[in-house]
Amino acid sequence: MRAPVFLAVLLWGAVVTAAPVPDVRVAVDISGSMKQSDPQNLRRPALKLLTGLLPEGSRAGVWTFGQYVNMAVPWGRVTPAWKARARAEADRIHSRGRYTNIEEVIQKAAFNWRRPDPRYARHLVLLTDGKVDIARDAEVDELSRRRVLDELLPQLKAAGVKVHTVALSARVDRELLERLSATTGGWFAEATSAADLQRIFLQMFDKAAPRPSLPIEGNRFEVDDGVKEMTVVVFRRPDDPPLRIHPPDGKAFDEAHAPDTVSWYHEDTYDLVTVRRPATGTWRLATRSDPDNRVLVLTDLALDVDPLPANLLVGDPLPVKAWLAEKGRPVTRRDFLDLVQFRVLDRQAPDAPPGEWKLADDGQAEDGRARDGIYGVVLRDTSEAGEHELVIRADGATFQRERRHVFRILPALARLAVVASEGGFELSVQPEILLVEPDSVAVLREDTGEPLPRTGEHVWGLTLPASLAGQPFGVRVKARRLHGKTVEASYTVMLPGAVATHPAGEQSGHGTGAPAAEHPPPAAESENAHAAAPEGHEGDGSETPAPAADHPDEAGETAGTDWTRILMLTLIINLVLAVAGLGGWLLWKRLRRRGQAQDELAMQL
Image (tube, rainbow, N blue to C red; front, side):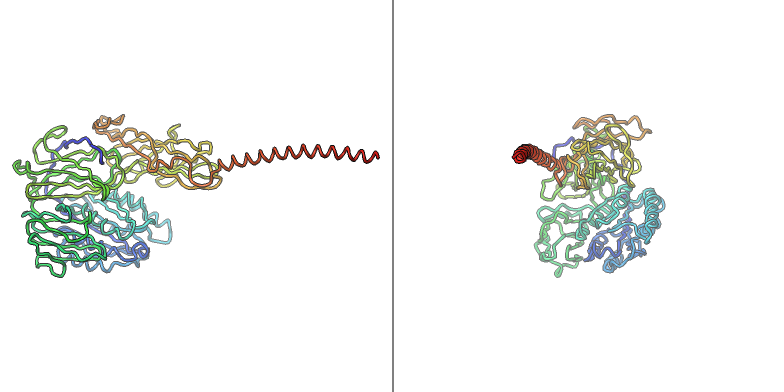
């Protein structure tokens, strides 16, 4: 989202109520396969980071699961004693479990989540490297998986639980984890290695128990007199020198020489430092800079942000709403707010300059109420697929506050793949579980309108003849988005230019093509959208996906044997041999006649 965008403040004023208390439950896989996925047991420091950051007074519990499920840290109120126990139990995490009983750990972790409770913000964090595995019988495993999706998932959603899932290997049941998170409005994260776990668990903390923070610029941050306590999170490499913190008075300290008001927890990969009653002024961190470092604060003056989505489709609008709250109540004093600037930054890559937009409260455009203390903006150019981090900031004359939100933009509603098979091509279409309800999907041929048959649980496929080699082939995907609206979009994939006589490589991507309009369910026909809104215009509220190819350079011939060239060379060689053979036959025939004449002459003599 780098290009200029049309900004509009939001339509409604936020209804502010008492902030719900976080209720966070963590389920950690200890099956035997973790010996390969996490040989260094990096689940331990990651769990310590998450539990160490939970605010006192929140609710939390930790479960481990393999063949059996154990409550490692009893669910209850988070206190210093609870955190100490969580830290001790984290050191006991192992990889000796025989199976992966995902169904039972969800049941036990959600033991008292029966109905919604507005007093609590419910979150379940599930970390696994595998799939449902409770017996040697695959049919038993499949029945357990179906119960997770058909029984437990609806119960979790109805109880207002957000499920955040972490996949730690390529063997994981990705579709199961994506459905658990997407259906409940949670976050799905994929760790490329166990070393990613600590930063992923920090993301999970930001979503489950968000706290206001202070911006860090050049390893410096400003503490105002409204900060009662701060927790500094500093990521490090094992060979980095020890962290030193420089307070405003210049008397630097490290872990060994920390004041009595400082609690310091050290791991090889991070430091967690809590300072009670920190001095006002500029603080400095003497360490290597890291974009994931944090200064989380306990303060009466907080920056609150309306819930933001975890997953978007290219072209989806992204509304952002923020306000300052003092002791839980929104600040409306204009003499104070007129000195505050609200901004939102979009960071997609650490080395790339962020996009930046201002939030407004001026009653213009779609703002229903001016100067009510609720600031907003709608980001409309959501055209860059990938993972993004929004940083929402409030900069006042004497203070700063910050909140972060990680989300992803997906390029299309479905993933298309083509495999050259013997005598033709195999096309497969798989919907993005993070965007659509998989049971609502229909896939049609663009040329005939005929439906493609299902070839898997949520996979549609078709065998195409070799005569279509080198030509585009279009499909139309119809589905219902997770927020209830239906959408149709067309995608085109280029078939390879030649057909192999044996299975060849796979061509995959999201396809290309013009999107169709998104429509609400029939019950809300008045909101139907029949065409994409023009660029820079909000239209009628419909969503207009704009899918793009992941790998447009793959639209030509597939890698492998060039059968066309071989065929041409074979024809040329055969032609040369034919000409040579014809000349040889004529020469042989002429010589034969001469030989026969000589024989006849010899016989006459």
